[in-house]
Image (cartoon, rainbow, N blue to C red; front, side, top):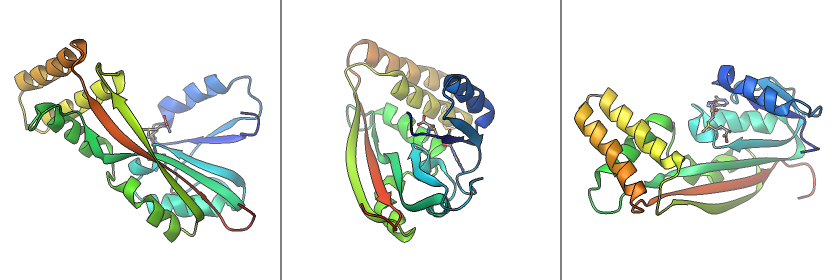
Length: 205
Ligand SMILES: C[S@@+](CC[C@H](N)C(=O)[O-])C[C@H]1O[C@@H](n2cnc3c(N)ncnc32)[C@H](O)[C@@H]1O
């Protein structure tokens, strides 16, 4: 990426930052910084493009993060967002499928605002962005599960177990069912994703 100069890693930076430093070694135009999207360590008007890739739905205050993006972008700069519409997470293959409870629990545990993707146009408009363009995308796992959706079911099962909602035998059975379905080619998991691009006023589109 010849025109990329700075990437901000945050929150779990202790884990992520060393990895991105290693990956970025030998790319002299890249600088990795740690920081909070809600209080960026960057001066106003210093950034061409702000990218939130599956980040904004995890941030406590997405309005503040978008206000920060607006602040650090140069006039005419762009914001690009890609996030899950986590209201659509589905691993059910029939009514009352117990694996769906695991997926729901995972979303509740991992995602700060499952409705965020649906509010993106309004949030971008409220932050003062213009020329807002939104598109839909699909993530589909079938007939076998990828690591991602099996991990999601696993995290949800962990959350149900930790919360005392199920016991260890049920947790084990749920994990086994997810794996069985995948191995048998009977798995079906789906998440809709949304991308949004918008611009800070000040230059042509
Ligand atoms: C699902 S991960 C996505 C990571 C990466 N962007 C990617 O696409 O693989 C969500 C990320 O949001 C980050 N995050 C959560 N709260 C944040 C905040 N206040 N500021 C910046 N990043 C935050 C977490 O550190 C985590 O790395």
